[in-house]
Image (cartoon, rainbow, N blue to C red):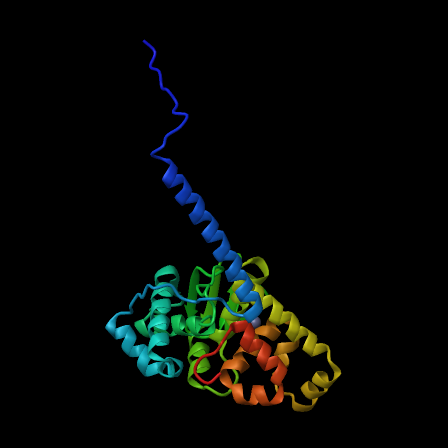
Length: 278
Ligand SMILES: [Zn+2]
């Protein structure tokens, strides 16, 4: 005998669930609309953090406290968020040594700390275009342009390459406007902003355009010529300009603000950076 499966035309027990699902759908849609409205009006995401807090190991936390000034300047709440983000970053990315570099706990902590500092104002903080970080002891040979590099971002391989010697100098010397870690992670962030459609990327693109507009003003050009504040390399192309700009933003915020207040303000908004004394 064939089995007969009768379809129920009306299942009263399902109705309340169906209503619930529809209502939840509408609520979620309205929330998304509100969230987008908020982000475009106030230039920052409605919230940056969910209610989850991962932790670092005690030894990692100790390195962070001892070595990373920015962390010490954060409020207790922001410290918790920062640690969570670093733990998340370290669980997602693979850090690999090259030319006999053995990856130490300190290397892991500092790479994650720099990356998470740069993206701390964002909700989307983990760098979708980076899966690997390769660490060389010193400047390394790059086939891309047949030269030695201190750092490199390769989006096709989803890799950031760093010379450890220069990375260390970058974060130890805090006011020379050189920070290779910040520089390379900015490249990854900027390319992500070009490709992605999330709130952080939209904000990045908006303020980057505003910065480019600033650069076309005659008074700003004169100020660039007169002060020679940004190193020449910044003017290689717009990607290098942005990467150098963030180095200056983190290393000498006071000078930057004084000499180019508008560009500083847009950089701050682009990163949504309202922490420590920035
Ligand atoms: Zn660069």
